Image (cartoon, rainbow, N blue to C red; front, side, top):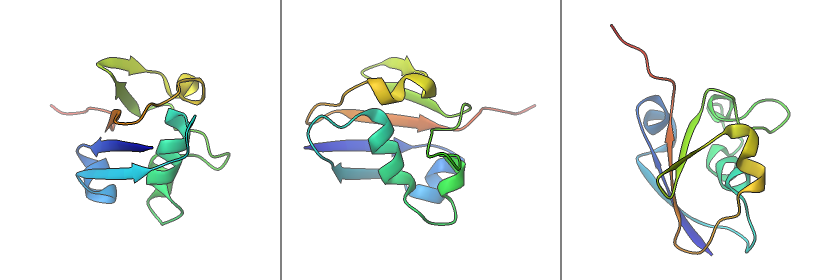
Length: 91
């Protein structure tokens, strides 16, 4: 199945603005984020050493914010899109 992932701010710099992924049926948000992170030097921005999504990553799926802790239980469907945001800071 195909899903689209859009990244913003620091994540966009590391992983690109938008990626279309082909992932197995019954894949979860966690599977998709692991695929985007890959194994490159910037993977640590999204996933930790145990291959879990870092707690600060903001994930939007179908206009609903998904907790990184729940990402492994949320299945994706063909045509879904995810949005990944880093923590927001500013002054």
